Length: 395
Image (tube, rainbow, N blue to C red; front, side):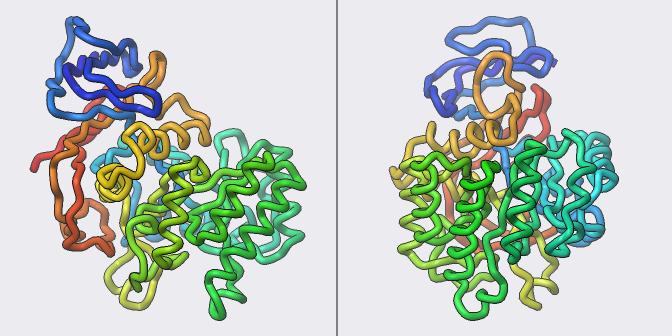
C-alpha cells in the first residue's frame, strides 16, 4: 500500500520542516512540500512525523520465559512505543548460544510480522564465563554478542572474545559488572569493567558497545576513549536519565543526580550514541522477590522527550538521532532517517498530549515500572513499518 502523509512536522536527525512524506512499496519515495500522489492519504496536521525508533537492548523472554513476555506481546508493546526494530538479548531458556535458537526467534518473528528483530548471541556458551567455540558457528545474521545480565570477569576470556569478534565482524555488547565487587560497591563494579573493556577494545580493535552506562565516571571513560579513536559506542536508558535516588530495582541501579547530569551532558556532547530501554519485563511475583528490571519500551519516548527536549536540554533532531539514526548505523540497516530509499518505518506523535503512566495498562506482560502515576508529554499516535499500519492509538 502506498501512503502519503500530509502536513506533518517532519523531523529526523538532520531536518525539521512542515511538509509531506510519500511511501511507495514500503520505501520512502519522496518528501517535501505540497506533494501530490494518487494513494491513501493521512492527515498529519498538528502531528510530528519521525523515523520509528530502534532499540538496541530488549528482553522479550522467548524462548523459555514466555510467562514474562513473548515475541507477540513484546512486539505489540514495541509498536505502541513507536519502535519497529529491536535487538533481543540472549538470556532466554535455552540461552541463545546457537544458530538454532536464533533461527527459532527469527522465524517466529517473521511469522508474527510485527517488528523487525535481531537476535543477540551469548559471548560465552550458556553464559558459562569461559567457552567461546560456539562463536565459530555463527553466520552473518548475527551482528552482536553479549552476556547481558552478567559481566565477564575473566580478562583473558574477554580478550579472546574481542579477538574473535574482530575476526568475525561482530560487535561486543558488554554488561559492565564485576559481581564480586557488586556487593561492596556497585559503582566500582561498573567502572572497573568499563575501563577494562575499553582498554581491550583499544588493544584488539574490536567494536565495543557499552550497555546501560549509568555512572559519571563510566561516561567520562567513554568520552576519553572516543577522543582517542577507540571503536566504542554506548547507550543510556530512559530511567537512568529521568530518575535519581530511587530504589526501584534495576541492574545497574538508578544512580545519584550527579550521574544523571553527567549522562545528559554525554547526550548533549555526543558521547552517548543511543537511548536503549533495557526493556526487562517480570511477573509481579518475581519483582517482589527482587528481580531487577522494568518494562520500558512503551514509555521510552514520552520519558525521553519530556526529560530532554521539553526541558530544552536538546532539540527534537538530536532526540531522533539518539533514538533512531545512530542505532540504525550501529546495527547496519536502512532505517532511522527520513531519506529516499530508506525503509518506510515511521511514527506519528502528538507532542502536546500529556499522559499519566499506568503500568497496568501496558500491552507488555510486564507491568513493572518506576514511573507509575508520573506525567509526561508525547504520545505515539501511529506506528508504520514498511508503510503498513502496525499500531494506531485508540485513546
